Length: 445
Image (cartoon, rainbow, N blue to C red; front, side, top):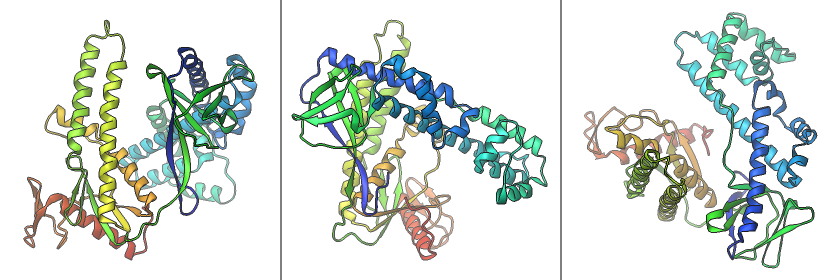
């Protein structure tokens, strides 16, 4: 999340100082369950095609939810109710974004569509009013320049056939959001007050607040997320805060990175960071495969997923800590001013066996990338993505295609031989420098 110039947002955590009573945990869980009910109500009522026009900016839905009487029925304070409404709307918008992305991919991969067909479908998907009208089975009512552009793109295509195709694709790709989780809730500044070395949280009872002693005296005034841990009789407060970026001395120059599963990062200089990442990832994969299969095999007599989830959480936490430590070590050692990273391909089922496939599919590359982005921002390092196709088979010296064998890259054209990942990182750096020379930095993260 971006803040103002020279600032970023990061999440800090606050913890309860002493275990909460069973009664207090139940009161907090009741709020979480009510917030879940609100979100599922919004999902059911507004995630359909007929509500597309209401999603932006969402105040129409807010007013309709006020009139629905659901808040009064639940007895839920407004500070929790409306945040749950807008949180659900955010999920619905994200779901529509994913739907459009999947439909767009199907359009690109459909060999029966002409370039004119694809151009028409992309136009309809990008123009919200046009998209809504087509999905509703009506004719787009556009004005001004949009009317002229629509007339231009639809003159040489069968709009009826393409509109039918688009509606079918949306039906196939769209999933209705739903949540079964009730492990926390959002709270606005009006829903809490810091005092007495703790926090007072609004409860469902009128004019009553629950006091929770905290381990620190920090005070914030922003939207927070209260995550509950009933088995530990505790909670954490997830607080997004805006902090100034650091501008540490000595950070300059450009660095190319090759990102992988066996080793987290290799630089263009051949230095490796996160060499034990695969061990952490494999431990998590093995645990999930073995324990989940055992749980499913004995599902009738199994008391629940508590033990399994706790074990999985421990392994994920260990891996995440390792990722953070290695990224910090890399940036503090290399001290780059600009970091170039290749765009990563989507997950694939390719592999030698089921274990390899499972490890690849559970590869948390999104988390690794997000942590790299966050830590680069904290140090005022620019992170730029470059085009990644063919980057691992191209020779970093002469540009010809080479051969990869046992983690070694060989170029038959110029005779160069070096570690495969270092060759990739050198190509990343070359492509990044070319982007900068051409003045194209639109892939800046």
